[in-house]
Image (cartoon, rainbow, N blue to C red):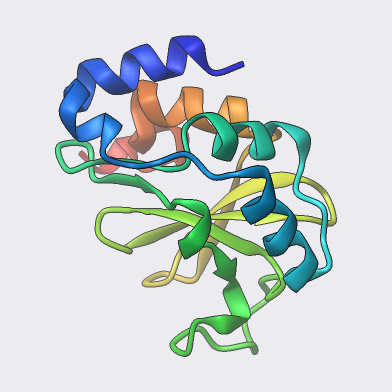
Length: 148
């Protein structure tokens, strides 16, 4: 499902760095879903079974491995008085946590959340599209290309 993205990731970070992250097991996914009482979207499950995260310090893009994924409300510095769905899963970040990648399980859509300016933007309707956008051009995807 993610063969092309895997090749692009390896090109960007090198094979040794890319292979350092072990894939998630079906048991780990089931445990995660049991803890949160939520079924992950099929393509996100496939992502964790095939890739389980991605980090590129040059692009400052980080998609968390399954063991680091948690709900937005579990972050102490994010106030629940914001208009964000606090039950969204935080699946990664950009620019050393300047922007968080979120999954809203109610809509199965992906969002970029900027803590600094209290902005949330829908960025993808599937993990595949999120990943394609991040690997292509993450700043344009979240609408910040004008600030470069």
